[in-house]
Image (tube, rainbow, N blue to C red):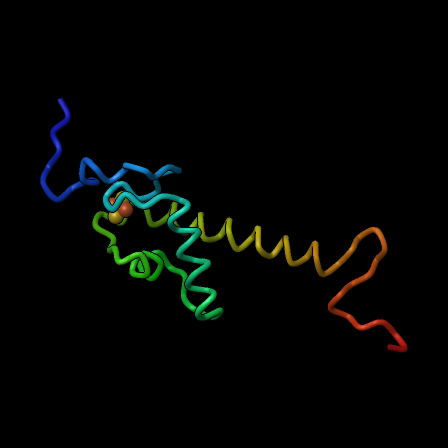
Length: 107
Ligand code: FES
């Protein structure tokens, strides 16, 4: 039988109105929460640290068991990888060979 210990796990009402993959079960933090926090952090400071403890602090949470930290790191890494891919796609047009980041000769 599952017994919910006081202070562990999300409160019974924590999931109301929220959806997404839960990354942190102690704090009920979803993948979308982490992605949103990372975007917000980087908007304020593009050189900010993005380790889970800093992302969680931005969400006004703290790691409890910290078992989710590796998964949270992967979410951040996936988000950054997707952002880098998007930058590459926009900066370099593979069809025409035009790169927006390099000025054309004679211009
Ligand atoms: S699962 Fe995230 S702190 Fe425990």
